[in-house]
Length: 372
Image (cartoon, rainbow, N blue to C red; front, side, top):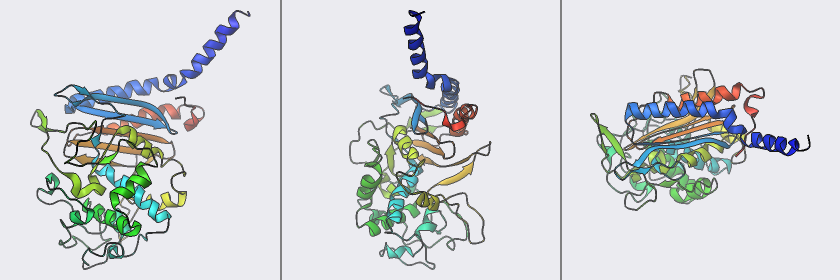
């Protein structure tokens, strides 16, 4: 019997160390199948996915190539994708730090912080801008394919500052990335620092998002993916663009691992106070009381099983991305591809369901223990 004891201890220790694969092996297998099915259907050159629960990474995987011509594989830890409008929640985080410090009022006229923006027929506020309620226009013509380099936030605002509001602020929801140019300008006015420096020190550095950066078209960026688009049945390299005109609303590069770090920061109150998060995640309403399912920089919703989530999608020239956070279940899903207009067909939510179904099947629900 004494000879069996060491073997029993070894078995128990080994079982503990492999607990995570036992718990989630089916979810990982099914999620990988879902991802591969989409890659094949959409003919996506490269994709990365990262999943965490309770702040612990459960699964990370790179699919295909970041550069298919040179056969460079995707690495979810290093490959930088264009995340498009997932940049908006990043900017929201910087704005929230100012709000928490009492340095910015979300409801005063935007000229309080951006005096160079011309007065319009109606006053507009940061809160309205953050919920796409302010009446600022979106892209026109070929602006989405911009190739001009804008050195400052103020220079980017020149694109639309002469345009009239497209509706009375608060009267309806109208999606706009240019509204986020104004939010980044308000961050500069309230912080007395340039936007990119402020978001770097208050968000990216604090969360150790070491592979997140604004996209500089005139600089070499390490581990940057090639960008692709679909032309008929063919996949081709996307045309070059310069996203300096919209850093705050769609100009950042990131990895799915960094997106995961960012999402996890919203599962507790170490980074912001609960009261702050509640303000930015409050469902905004139009003037007639209709909820828009959008807070400040965050989409709000429920999945097919009535679970609440908040997150954002992103679409860029040569990039499609998604970040989803389930606050009650403490699950975060991040997906990024290197191709324009990928039809995800609910892929992020389907992956989330694989893991959530397994978590919910446990006796302790979302208190399932994790091991690194």
